[in-house]
Image (cartoon, rainbow, N blue to C red; front, side, top):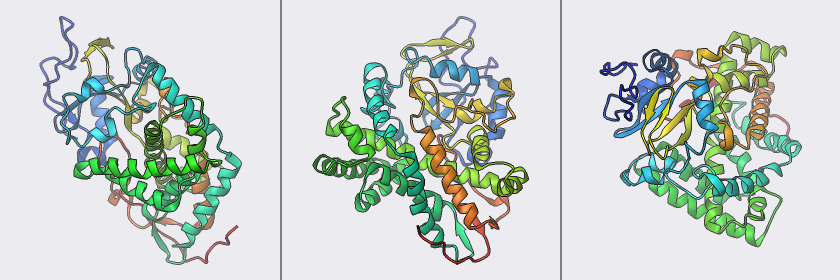
Length: 419
């Protein structure tokens, strides 16, 4: 990727008199197709040029700082007092039609709050998720995954994004939330509009809120053994409005990133001889492949957004007040300073964030992805890519690491028996 021209001093933010970073300088666009096609190459160039803090643009006219140093990221993630997650001051200067607003604006949820409100929302969410029966979840993944495999196993080809990973992640989450099919479909359509941004994002927010309000009213009338009911019954006593935002966060975190984790791991297994032979042969587990993906190609590449309340000096650089600071989980995980090339069993990655905002569903994400992948590989062990790896494409966007499609071919197979 072409880097911007050299600024007057080699690293933006470093000034001789300690003044805040110059936000008008050249920035690296994270929304371009060029970035999505070779993010690792771009991160290397960033590191050579800027060090641990990089001036970037999330969308045209939306500046931010990207953290690509592992230890710097850990410091920021564990310092919510100086790096709070509340974006309300930042929002005041952002146009209402900004395509990133639906992903970044303030909401009454754990992701976009700090302090006591963050704790209140987070504890309710943890109570909802901790009640998931992980043994029962194995069965749910099988009950959803096998019919999906049966829908294409006799064809000899499939797109594993559209025909497997996306519907599986979506349906498993709906089962956990106790969401009926018709409301789930409305939520799916809305989320896709939000994630893709553009003109449909605002309408996507509205239709998602409508679907989730209907789900909440249903669960108030008919409580169940599900995440929605447990959050609702928590001592935090969340209002219907607050419940909508907790559930929308779970949809955002439980579908797109889960889909990407499954697909990115399948891509590694299908293209890397260390895994392709070893996973199917039994010497390496699917979990080992998952660990490597969570280091090198995590499903959310750049996220964990915070908004400093005042200019702050970090790593000899001044960061401006109220401008987004993003953690590049991918770049931090591959930071040469941590020197990690042993991934199996290594949980030092930041793919699930860290500090008080660390993802509370990481164990569930591992379980769902591992079961989904094992199920597919067991059913279609001779599966291979339908295209050369260099012809596969990635969806542009500043936050995710998401394949456009993952086409595969395999010998035509009879349907699997249903449990």
